Image 1 (tube, helix red, strand yellow):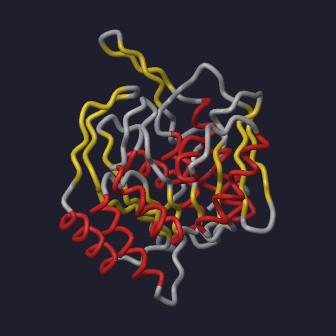
Image 2: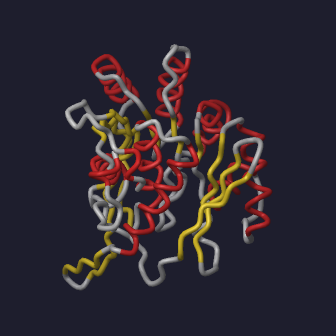
Length: 288
């Protein structure tokens, strides 16, 4: 990270970032991953839990959504008690909860203080489990995505939300990211990590120009929670007043190092790659 952004006042309160997402009991994704990422980037993390997911990498056993009243209460008390400086949304589970989140974000958007909102449209887990009720998809299209400062779909999510066939090339990525921004009127970072190639390249379209963000592909490591962590990092950096391209560039470097330094845990013969949310290589202490 850029040491030129060092704050001279180390006693100032940390920036506050809110994650609205599901709980991953294995700690690699969801609000657990978000809180680790917020801590790495020296922000204070708040969470509004949408669902409780019983999972381990590669396997989802059960998903239990919280009530709309519970989510509303969480959001209300947090907004009343803290000066939130950035928000990211992750797994929202069903249409009822999507409505609660949309109402909350719409109310915030009417205030004078514009809060950056990163919408990570979590539709399917890395193990292939559907994580969003089909009835909620229309709410994503109609109300949530247009509120986003930045949407961060992967290739499958973008194809679903655009009603496109699978996106299989960089050229198709360029076309899809333009369509996404045009359709939903939000800046879009299309993540291309599932494409083949020596680099993992993501594409940002802001409505005027396109920009690529690339890091060398890390092979033979498949930790889950990379999408959650990436979007959380962007939100944390936006809370520190980074520009959007700066935030994406720093977050891209961070997630690449976190994947490279992931560890393999083994218990009873079950081996999983676990993302390193506190990697060595980015000097967060001197950067913020």
